Structures are given as C-alpha cells and as structure tokens.
Image (cartoon, rainbow, N blue to C red; front, side, top):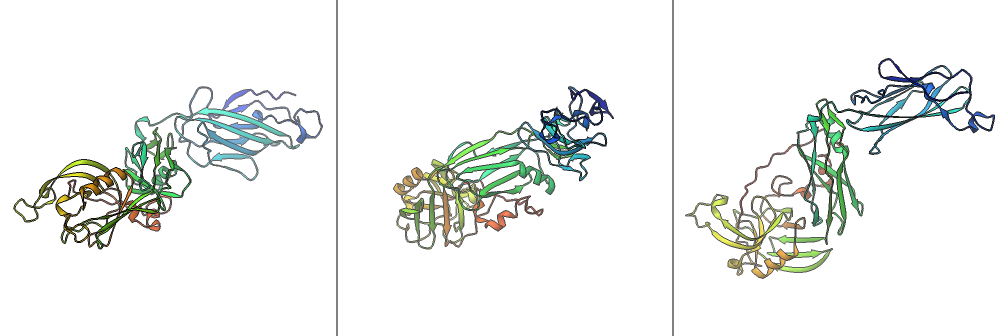
Length: 416
C-alpha cells in the first residue's frame, strides 16, 4: 500500500492528493486499525489553502473537506506563528471543517488535520501556508504609554491608535488584542476614552513593586473592511512603593502614606473661595523645580486684587491645567489653618522639597473635603480612579456597545 502524498489543484486553490486504493488500512505490527501509527491522510482531504508560493487571501475562510465516502474528519487545528488559534466549526458528520474567524494578514499558518477511515484507522496531515496583506497602507498601529520606567501604583496604561475606531464590533476586536500582564497578577480593564485612545487600570491600584507588560496581538488582524492591525512595540513598566497623599482641604493638612503606613503629616493651604481645589484622586504627572506662575494664565486680570506673578519652587504637577503641590513660603501663616491659594496645594519650602523628592510620576494625590469640582476622569491628567469599577467597565467594548467618547477642555497653564 502507498500513502505518500501527491498534491494537485482542484477548483482553483483547493489542494487534493491522488486517492488511495479503497479498503487500505494503516501499516503497523497489529492487525487492529487503532493500534497502527497514523497514516498520511493527504488523499482523504481537500484544503482550500494556496498552492506553492502563492499567498492566501486573509479575507477568505479556510475549509477542509473529506474526500470519498470512507473517510471523515475528526479534528482540525489551525494556528499562526504567534500561537494564535483560528476558531472553526466541524460538521457533525465529519465531512467539512471551516474557519469562523478572520485570518491574519502577512501571517504563517499551520493546519493539523486528523481523519478516520471506515475501519477506524487514523490519519494525519499537516499543511502550511502564508497569507498576504491586501491593505498594507491601512495598518492600525498601537503606541503604548507611558514611557518604559518606574512609576507609582496609580499610573494608568495608555494605548494610542494611529487611526480612529468607532464601530463597537471593531473596538471589541482591537480590545481583545491588547494584552496586559501584571506580576503579581490583578484584574483590570480597558476604557475607550475616545476613538483613538484607551486607558487600562485595575480595580484597585497596581500592587507595589509590580512588573506590568502591555502588548498588542493586533498584527495582521482584520479590524474592518478597510483596516488591518499593524506591528506595535510592547511596553514594560514597574511600580515602586505605594505612595498616597490625602489632601484634606477641611483640616488643612496632608497625610502621607507609604504602603499603608503614615509617614508624614504636613500643614497645607488649598484653594480659597472662587478658586477651590478639585476634589478627587489625581496622579502625579511630573515635577518641575521652578515654575513661573501668573494669574493672567488662568484669566485673572493684572489689575485685580487676585493678580499674582511669582517664582514657584519644588512644583509637583497633578493636572495639565496647572494644579500643583508646591512651595508657598508667602502663605506659611495660613498653612494648617486656612485656604488662601488659587487652586494649588501650598506648603512650606522644606515640606515641598520633601514631597518633591518623595513623590514621582504615577503616585497618588487625593483631595477630600474641598468645595471644588470633581476631578475629570480624562482630559486634565489621569483622573481615571474617580470612576467606580462598575462605571469603568462600561467603557470597555467587551462589556457594552455604549462606549462614551468624552471631550474635555483643559487650561494648559499653572494656577497658584
């Protein structure tokens, strides 16, 4: 008997190998068909993949069909070089298997087919092929942020897309391909801030001293008829100690915790009436040793009694619109007793230097008991933690099709 494959073309791109003689069984030392090694089943199947060096159209589904009345397909697995499986469906009678998910563009695939003949003998066939790219110029690329490095436990991850994705089904495809791994492990979710930006955070803050990696499996995946996933660079960040500063505008004190233990209590002043500091959780965005702060930058006229133009030192930024924690030696008499600033959190120069040296990007500053507005979740820094976990989940394309697309205006200027 002869089970060596001989490939020929059937119906365009269909591969078929010349049929074996009827009634032949697999070779082996035992007469029982199930005890024999699997034979080459090439002549028992037809495959819709390409011939030779030709590349498959990723828009077209895969199909494997049984040839002849004596054979049936028992299993098919198709994977690409990245280990991604292609979902598929096998008919109840074992006569046909077809893919139910799109193929990736510019990918290398391996298809493993198992068969069984009328005597129960088992056959195997491994097929390989590559897919082309019908739209290289339409690649959807992902850029992860922030930059690689060490951050506080409040730092959200950001995925920026180079092209807008608005359709809910397309967003779900994108989101499934964006993977985040944390050691120690935590549950988290993506939130669509708008059609080109997603944020990722866990239910609570990241664990201290964690390693977090974000990557995209979108390469070659069809997102829409006009858009395919492109290559993206993965990102790894780490976290340090859990540093949280609770700014109490009512008591005029800031209490600082490291890994849950209080390490400092600092007299402060926050925003006075008309300039109240925003309530809510903020994430440190950066630090500037020196900032020139002017009232005109937030709409205060030069002739006003509220006008100011001052050099400010040890400034730790918490919003893009100009809210800082900084040295305010001119208000030391009010620190711990009254709110006299224009929205920032002021403290003595020594305390501000300590805060500047202790806190870094991603650390948490939470303002409570202020009469100010609530911190925006997006658009003025990282206010992501001000959304409850249930509300955060509504921003995922995998949980709802009603994905918000908020627009926030921010004053890009410091406020004292």
